[in-house]
Image (tube, rainbow, N blue to C red; front, side):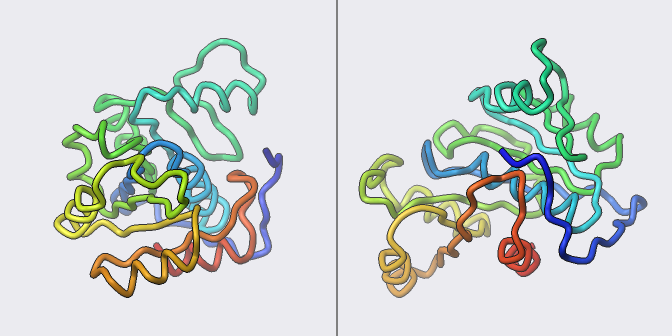
Length: 205
Protein backbone atom coordinates (compact mmCIF):
# COMPACT_ATOMS: atom_id res chain seq x y z
CA UNK A 1 0.00 0.00 0.00
CA UNK A 2 1.20 3.49 -0.71
CA UNK A 3 1.92 5.77 2.20
CA UNK A 4 1.28 9.01 0.39
CA UNK A 5 -1.36 10.56 -1.82
CA UNK A 6 -0.80 12.27 -5.17
CA UNK A 7 -1.62 16.00 -4.98
CA UNK A 8 -1.03 17.02 -8.58
CA UNK A 9 -4.62 18.17 -9.19
CA UNK A 10 -6.09 21.27 -7.64
CA UNK A 11 -7.56 20.60 -4.24
CA UNK A 12 -10.76 22.46 -3.43
CA UNK A 13 -12.42 22.85 -0.06
CA UNK A 14 -15.86 21.34 0.24
CA UNK A 15 -18.76 23.13 1.89
CA UNK A 16 -19.30 21.68 5.37
CA UNK A 17 -22.79 23.20 5.45
CA UNK A 18 -24.09 20.94 2.67
CA UNK A 19 -25.97 17.70 3.47
CA UNK A 20 -23.95 14.49 3.39
CA UNK A 21 -23.93 12.59 0.10
CA UNK A 22 -24.05 8.81 0.47
CA UNK A 23 -22.47 6.66 -2.23
CA UNK A 24 -23.13 2.91 -2.31
CA UNK A 25 -20.79 0.32 -3.85
CA UNK A 26 -21.96 -3.26 -4.53
CA UNK A 27 -20.21 -6.24 -6.10
CA UNK A 28 -22.07 -8.55 -8.49
CA UNK A 29 -20.16 -11.32 -6.72
CA UNK A 30 -17.04 -11.90 -4.62
CA UNK A 31 -13.65 -10.79 -5.93
CA UNK A 32 -14.98 -7.95 -8.10
CA UNK A 33 -12.79 -5.26 -6.48
CA UNK A 34 -15.61 -3.59 -4.55
CA UNK A 35 -13.55 -2.69 -1.48
CA UNK A 36 -10.59 -1.56 -3.58
CA UNK A 37 -12.86 0.75 -5.57
CA UNK A 38 -14.49 2.12 -2.38
CA UNK A 39 -11.07 3.01 -0.94
CA UNK A 40 -9.87 4.55 -4.20
CA UNK A 41 -12.99 6.69 -4.51
CA UNK A 42 -12.75 7.84 -0.89
CA UNK A 43 -9.11 8.89 -1.34
CA UNK A 44 -10.05 10.87 -4.44
CA UNK A 45 -12.95 12.60 -2.65
CA UNK A 46 -10.74 13.50 0.34
CA UNK A 47 -7.41 14.43 -1.23
CA UNK A 48 -8.62 15.41 -4.66
CA UNK A 49 -11.80 17.27 -3.72
CA UNK A 50 -10.99 18.36 -0.16
CA UNK A 51 -14.13 16.74 1.24
CA UNK A 52 -14.51 15.18 4.67
CA UNK A 53 -14.97 11.51 3.80
CA UNK A 54 -15.91 8.30 5.60
CA UNK A 55 -16.04 4.72 4.32
CA UNK A 56 -18.38 2.22 5.99
CA UNK A 57 -17.88 -1.55 5.76
CA UNK A 58 -21.48 -2.75 5.51
CA UNK A 59 -20.61 -6.45 5.24
CA UNK A 60 -18.96 -9.18 7.27
CA UNK A 61 -15.75 -9.57 5.27
CA UNK A 62 -13.46 -8.01 7.91
CA UNK A 63 -11.20 -6.28 5.39
CA UNK A 64 -11.26 -2.91 7.18
CA UNK A 65 -9.89 -4.34 10.40
CA UNK A 66 -7.12 -6.15 8.53
CA UNK A 67 -5.83 -3.23 6.47
CA UNK A 68 -6.64 -0.74 9.24
CA UNK A 69 -4.34 -2.59 11.64
CA UNK A 70 -1.56 -2.80 9.03
CA UNK A 71 -1.77 0.86 7.99
CA UNK A 72 -2.06 2.34 11.49
CA UNK A 73 0.06 -0.17 13.40
CA UNK A 74 -2.71 -0.66 15.99
CA UNK A 75 -3.04 -4.26 17.11
CA UNK A 76 -6.29 -3.81 19.04
CA UNK A 77 -9.50 -3.57 17.02
CA UNK A 78 -10.64 0.04 16.61
CA UNK A 79 -14.09 1.50 15.94
CA UNK A 80 -12.60 3.73 13.25
CA UNK A 81 -9.25 3.85 11.44
CA UNK A 82 -8.04 7.13 9.98
CA UNK A 83 -5.76 6.62 6.98
CA UNK A 84 -4.65 9.61 4.91
CA UNK A 85 -7.45 11.74 6.42
CA UNK A 86 -10.17 9.27 5.40
CA UNK A 87 -12.10 7.58 8.23
CA UNK A 88 -12.77 3.84 7.79
CA UNK A 89 -15.50 2.22 9.92
CA UNK A 90 -15.38 -1.60 10.15
CA UNK A 91 -18.55 -3.64 10.81
CA UNK A 92 -20.77 -0.60 10.25
CA UNK A 93 -24.51 -0.49 10.86
CA UNK A 94 -27.37 2.01 11.10
CA UNK A 95 -26.03 3.52 14.31
CA UNK A 96 -22.65 4.09 12.68
CA UNK A 97 -24.27 5.76 9.67
CA UNK A 98 -26.32 8.02 11.94
CA UNK A 99 -23.11 9.00 13.77
CA UNK A 100 -21.41 9.83 10.48
CA UNK A 101 -24.35 11.99 9.43
CA UNK A 102 -24.17 13.85 12.75
CA UNK A 103 -20.42 14.33 12.27
CA UNK A 104 -21.21 16.07 8.99
CA UNK A 105 -19.11 14.04 6.62
CA UNK A 106 -19.53 15.51 3.17
CA UNK A 107 -19.16 12.14 1.45
CA UNK A 108 -20.02 8.75 2.96
CA UNK A 109 -19.02 5.73 0.88
CA UNK A 110 -20.69 2.45 1.87
CA UNK A 111 -19.13 -0.87 0.84
CA UNK A 112 -22.19 -3.17 0.80
CA UNK A 113 -20.28 -6.30 -0.23
CA UNK A 114 -22.00 -8.55 -2.80
CA UNK A 115 -25.46 -8.27 -4.28
CA UNK A 116 -26.31 -11.73 -2.92
CA UNK A 117 -25.87 -10.55 0.69
CA UNK A 118 -27.56 -7.20 0.10
CA UNK A 119 -30.55 -6.85 2.47
CA UNK A 120 -30.11 -3.28 3.59
CA UNK A 121 -32.73 -0.55 3.49
CA UNK A 122 -29.83 1.90 3.78
CA UNK A 123 -29.24 1.38 0.06
CA UNK A 124 -32.35 3.51 -0.53
CA UNK A 125 -30.61 6.44 1.16
CA UNK A 126 -27.76 6.43 -1.34
CA UNK A 127 -27.55 9.33 -3.77
CA UNK A 128 -25.44 7.21 -6.14
CA UNK A 129 -24.92 3.45 -6.38
CA UNK A 130 -22.13 1.73 -8.32
CA UNK A 131 -22.35 -1.97 -9.18
CA UNK A 132 -18.97 -3.63 -9.83
CA UNK A 133 -18.94 -6.60 -12.21
CA UNK A 134 -16.23 -8.58 -14.03
CA UNK A 135 -15.68 -9.87 -17.55
CA UNK A 136 -12.97 -12.34 -16.50
CA UNK A 137 -13.66 -15.80 -17.92
CA UNK A 138 -12.72 -17.55 -14.69
CA UNK A 139 -15.35 -15.51 -12.85
CA UNK A 140 -18.07 -16.19 -15.40
CA UNK A 141 -21.12 -17.52 -13.58
CA UNK A 142 -19.67 -16.77 -10.15
CA UNK A 143 -22.50 -14.36 -9.47
CA UNK A 144 -25.28 -16.29 -11.20
CA UNK A 145 -27.55 -15.11 -13.98
CA UNK A 146 -26.61 -11.75 -15.52
CA UNK A 147 -30.31 -10.89 -15.49
CA UNK A 148 -30.28 -10.65 -11.69
CA UNK A 149 -27.90 -7.71 -11.43
CA UNK A 150 -28.85 -6.27 -14.81
CA UNK A 151 -32.52 -5.94 -13.85
CA UNK A 152 -31.63 -4.50 -10.44
CA UNK A 153 -29.26 -1.97 -11.99
CA UNK A 154 -31.80 -0.88 -14.60
CA UNK A 155 -34.66 -0.67 -12.11
CA UNK A 156 -32.72 1.22 -9.43
CA UNK A 157 -30.60 3.39 -11.72
CA UNK A 158 -27.27 1.91 -10.60
CA UNK A 159 -24.17 2.62 -12.68
CA UNK A 160 -22.25 -0.49 -13.72
CA UNK A 161 -18.43 -0.59 -13.63
CA UNK A 162 -15.80 -3.24 -14.30
CA UNK A 163 -12.14 -3.42 -13.30
CA UNK A 164 -11.30 -6.94 -14.49
CA UNK A 165 -11.73 -8.97 -17.63
CA UNK A 166 -11.64 -8.64 -21.39
CA UNK A 167 -12.11 -5.16 -22.83
CA UNK A 168 -13.52 -6.74 -25.99
CA UNK A 169 -16.12 -8.56 -23.89
CA UNK A 170 -17.11 -5.28 -22.26
CA UNK A 171 -17.44 -3.54 -25.63
CA UNK A 172 -19.56 -6.37 -27.04
CA UNK A 173 -21.72 -6.35 -23.89
CA UNK A 174 -22.40 -2.63 -24.29
CA UNK A 175 -23.42 -3.19 -27.91
CA UNK A 176 -25.95 -5.87 -26.96
CA UNK A 177 -27.36 -4.54 -23.69
CA UNK A 178 -29.05 -1.35 -22.61
CA UNK A 179 -27.22 -1.33 -19.25
CA UNK A 180 -23.75 -0.10 -20.25
CA UNK A 181 -20.66 -1.02 -18.24
CA UNK A 182 -17.84 1.53 -17.77
CA UNK A 183 -14.21 0.42 -17.42
CA UNK A 184 -12.43 1.35 -14.17
CA UNK A 185 -8.84 2.54 -14.80
CA UNK A 186 -6.14 0.14 -13.64
CA UNK A 187 -5.19 0.69 -9.99
CA UNK A 188 -2.23 -0.95 -8.25
CA UNK A 189 -2.73 0.83 -4.91
CA UNK A 190 -6.15 2.04 -3.73
CA UNK A 191 -4.47 4.54 -1.40
CA UNK A 192 -2.69 6.34 -4.25
CA UNK A 193 -4.72 8.19 -6.89
CA UNK A 194 -3.07 8.79 -10.27
CA UNK A 195 -3.82 11.63 -12.68
CA UNK A 196 -5.75 9.29 -14.98
CA UNK A 197 -7.84 7.97 -12.09
CA UNK A 198 -8.53 11.48 -10.77
CA UNK A 199 -9.72 12.70 -14.17
CA UNK A 200 -11.90 9.60 -14.54
CA UNK A 201 -13.40 9.99 -11.04
CA UNK A 202 -14.21 13.63 -11.74
CA UNK A 203 -16.27 12.63 -14.78
CA UNK A 204 -17.89 9.71 -12.93
CA UNK A 205 -19.01 11.55 -9.81
